[in-house]
Amino acid sequence: MVTEKDIAYLKQAMNLALEGVEEKAGGPFGCIIVKDGQVVGKGYNRVTSDNDPTAHAEVVAIRDACKNLGAYQLEGCTLYTSCEPCPMCLGAIYWARPERVLYAATRFTAADAGFDDDFIYREISLEDHKRKIPFIHCRETNASAPFEYWKQQAGKKLY
Image (cartoon, rainbow, N blue to C red; front, top):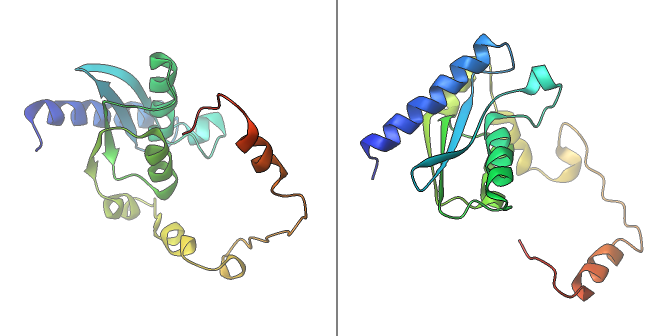
């Protein structure tokens, strides 16, 4: 169920998107993260200003919220974003594990403005060698060593 508060938070995310465009920081995307009625993280797209292809609004907001909460997961949080998340942000959101995500514009609206993520959605399902950027699995004999070492560690935090 979407409430009036949800719409107000979405408007805050959209205002951040407009602020990012005005600051010429990156694309027209904004995101806020809310926990218990308080904004705990926020960000707008900073790809071109930071020269960082991972500085999408959702990733920036997740990093901010995790820092502010002192946690690597967003339990009990709601993520509000001005646009449907791209595949990278979708992955980051799932790793952060918020309670729910609300978005305003669709990926098709973004595509109409020149932000077409559809090719990434298509690439994900392809075999390594059929992708536009070839992925090559190197069958190094000791590739499992870091994982074996990890499994033996006491007190590790699973995520």
